[in-house]
Image 1 (cartoon, rainbow, N blue to C red):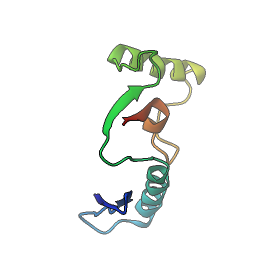
Image 2 (image 1 turned 60 degrees about the vertical axis):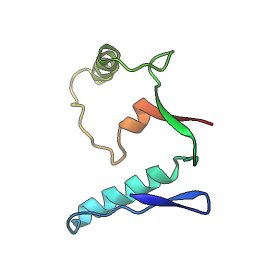
Image 3 (image 1 turned 30 degrees about the horizontal axis):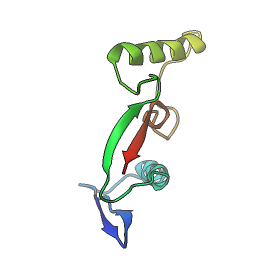
Image 4 (image 1 turned 90 degrees about the horizontal axis):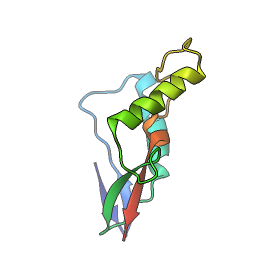
Length: 98
């Protein structure tokens, strides 16, 4: 998965098979997203649900968020991953405490 080198996390992802060309583009997009994440060595990580003031995730709240997105499209568009970046990055952010 990766390793710490001189205090910096370096990703090293390995796949069980050769990737198709279209998958390689997705991996490149993933690596760009991962490059934006600031990992801190020897700290405790946690999750923060950005759609709740207290940061707590609930299925009820996630359902409301998704229904609001469907309402915004008037129900004519499906919630399909048309974008190459994961929708997870829009819904959840990683919080690191020292």
